[in-house]
Length: 230
Length: 281
Image 1: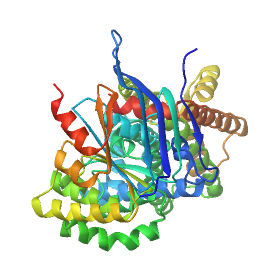
Image 2: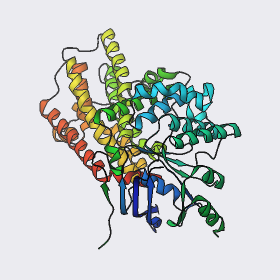
Image 3: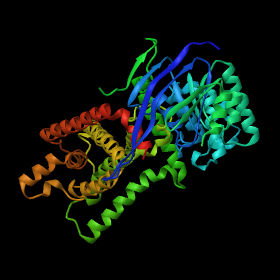
Image 4: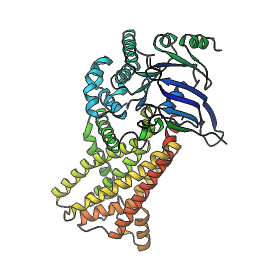
C-alpha cells in the first residue's frame, strides 16, 4: 500500500439542531475534534455504537454536511456515500435510478448505460430491475446499491452498513467484489457494526464514541476496544 | 477567537470536497435536471392505470367542474365561457402544480441528498421541468381545440413563446423559493397550499380581470399579481386576437426576474445548510 495521504481531517466539529419547534431547540454535538488521515488505496473501517457520529462523519466527508469547525485537506475528484436504500427515487425504476445515480457522480449517461447490463447481472434482481424501486425489498435495495457502487465507483467510496443486508449468497459475492476493489487500489471508508467484516476488509480502523475518536490504528485492537465499551 | 471551518487543497488540479457540488459543469447540471424530470414523469405515469392520459384528463376534469359551477349553476355572462375558463385554468394549473411540486421536491429527494453533494436547485428545477413537459402537451391540445372550434385567434400566436418563457421564469423563481422555505420549516407547506387557493380566486381564472369596475383596483390587481397579468395576456392572444399591454408585460418580466434573482441569491447563501436542515428533521 502506498503511503500517499488522500484525505486529511483535523479538528472536525459539527453541531446541529435536532428539534426546531418554536420553543426549546435541542443542539446535538455530532462530531468534535475529529482528526485522522486516509491513505490512498486503503480501506478504513469506522466502528462505534449507535449515535456515535459514524454516519455524520461520512456525510461530512462526502460534502453533504458542512462542518462547523476544523480543516479537511482532500485530494480526490469524486467521493460518494453508498447507503442501504436511501439514495433512490422510489417512483423510478431500478434501471433509471442506476443511470441517474451514475450521472450524479459526474459520469455521462452513455458511460453509465454501457454498464447497465453488468449492474443488472451483478445485482441479481432480474426483471425487478425494470420495476419501480418502491416495490423492492430491503435486500433488493442493498443489492442494487451495491451493484451500482461497484460498477460506477467514485475515487473514494464511503460505505455505510452496505453489507449488512442481503442473503448469504449475495453477501459472499459482495465480499468477493469488495476484496477485488480493495486489491485494485480503491480507497474506501467503511462503516460497520460487524466486527468480522472490519477485520476481514480493513487495513486500519477508527473507533468513534460520542462524536470523538477514542482510538485508531490496527483493526484487531480497535475491535477489542469497541467490544469493551460500556 | 472562535475556530471556523476551512478547506485547503493538496493538489491544485483537484477540486475540494465541499465544493464538489460545483464540480459538475452547467451542461451536466442541465442534463441532470432534464433526465430526472423525464425519468420521474415516466415513473409517475406507470403508477396509474391510465398513465400519461392523466396529463390531459386531470386539467379537463378541473375545467369541467369549474364549468359546471360557474356556467351551469351561476350562469356566467362571459361569452364562450368554456374556452375562457380553459385558458385561465390551464395557465393557473401550470403555475400552481409546478410550484407545489417544487416546494416539496427537496424533501422528497432526501435519499439522494444524503448520498451525494449536489446543488439543491436540481430537485425543484426538475419538478418545474416536469410541469413544463406536461404543459407543452396540454397547451398543444388546447390549441388544436381552439382551432377546430373556430373560437381561437391565431394572429399573434407567436406571442405565446415569450409569454411561456416569462411564465417559466416566474415559476422558477417562486418554485425555488418555495422549496427553500419548506426545507427550513415544513410549516410553509400549509401556507403554500393556502396561497395557491388565494391566487386561484384573485387571478381572474374564472372571471375576467378587465370586468373589475374600479379602474384603480383593476390596475393594482394586475400590478401586484403577476399571475393575473399572465392569464389575461394568454386570453388576449388566444381568444381576443389582441396584443397584451406592453407596460404590464414589462412589469411582469421585471417581477419574474427579480424573484428569480432573489431565489438564486438565496440558494447561494444557504446551499451548504440545506442538507443538514432536511436530514436532521
